[in-house]
Length: 193
Image 1 (cartoon, rainbow, N blue to C red):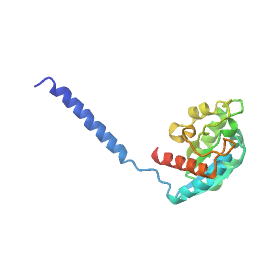
Image 2 (image 1 turned 90 degrees about the vertical axis):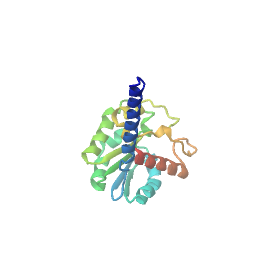
Image 3 (image 1 turned 45 degrees about the horizontal axis):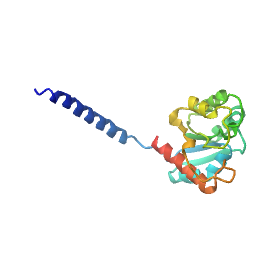
Image 4 (image 1 turned 30 degrees about the horizontal axis):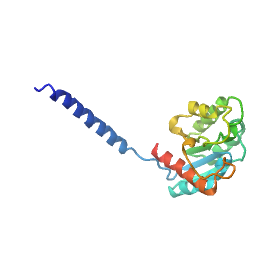
């Protein structure tokens, strides 16, 4: 046997295996929200995300309910009855949390609070998607981004800083068009993960 044939056979086998694995991934059932309830919770970014996200959820056959309060922090959501009451009322299959923007300029560790929110959502039997705060002019004094990356699984943490969208003059919030862009990015990401 030619000494080059065996290594070529191995390389060909590896190529076939890679193609088969890639094909198996392509057959993966895509994300579907049809018939499911979605709960959006959070701060002012959640308030802005709610109308365009509702359209996307409903277009896919789901239902969206929102509990959002302007100016709220991760700590407030973790330590108040808001989340538990919202979970009990909505009984969602999926929770989208848009929290952390108001925590960026605050010093102090939020690990316990992030863990509390994750645990409450899981205990309610829901899947969690956390929308990481987009790029802001606010300093991250509490290391919120690092905390979220450490405590929220990557498959559940939407990379907010990677999205560009039309901003309001305050450079924190979005315009209506910007919220639609952000909602579309979140929804597309959820379908691809």
